[in-house]
Image 1: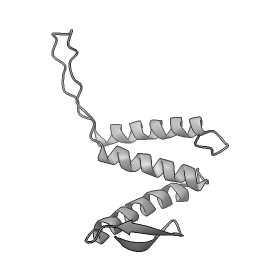
Image 2: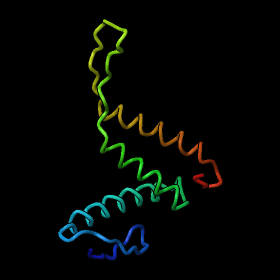
Image 3: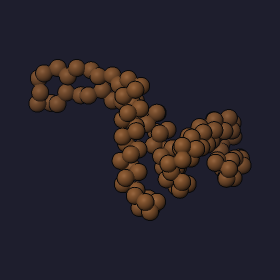
Amino acid sequence: MKQLEVQIMGQSYLLGCPEGGESRLLDAVERVDTAMCKIRDAGKVRARDRIAVLAALNLAFDLDPVPAPTPSTSSMAAVPSTTVTPAESSMLLTSLLERLDAALGEDGQLL
């Protein structure tokens, strides 16, 4: 396994990656670094661990498609399919991040 030294938010990390996976790993590092720097630069969150959690949630939210609702087995009525617009997604994500921030509180402790 090959090791690459990368920078995320100005901090060095030595990461292992399979042969031939360097490009994918560097792309992932770039996405994480960009997401974390964007949160840091917004100035609302200072703790690196909280920035990392928020960036991870942002990235996971972007990767996970919104599941279509499924009808309950006891209901015979058709459930209309719903699509979420980018603006609605942004509002949902903002709400989620605000709830996470409130849950984490001022101490910055994740657990």
